[in-house]
Length: 189
Image (cartoon, rainbow, N blue to C red; front, side):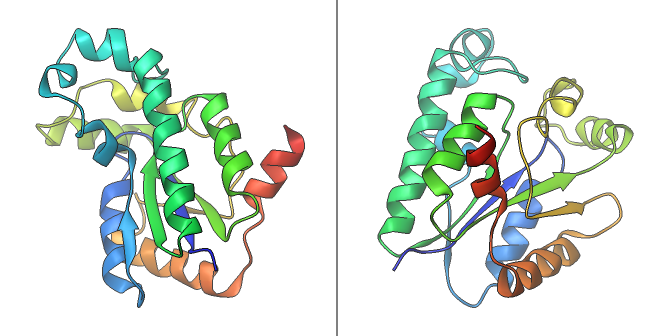
């Protein structure tokens, strides 16, 4: 029996990681964190610095050659883990239509929910300024594209709800509503 998949999609600084951690803390069964940052940090350190990051992984609003390979590897690893009965949560930045479509193709027939993590741009930019580990401008670059290619089972707003409240909303939805967003995305192609 396949494990559950919960994909959290939103811009940089939208609260995906905090929501993921709150979900892991509150869900009864264990869920693996197989998010994009986990895959990025597997790369050699030299790839994590500019300009190599931009040239190889891509810009904040689009993927480079390795960025596409990394996203594909992540998607297939999530599907493999779920196929082995493991539950998975992954935070993602679906800035490429091909990434969203690949998720739809791989996860539509699995118990997989796609969650939109929303936050107004002014709040995102304030969070970027307050956090010293963020590249200024990432959220703005991603803001108009990150949700453009996806449909959602549920959306949460981290500017008005805490990570714990967002996690509660998501858990309630997952426990009471079957996933439909990825199937609808696959149908629309």
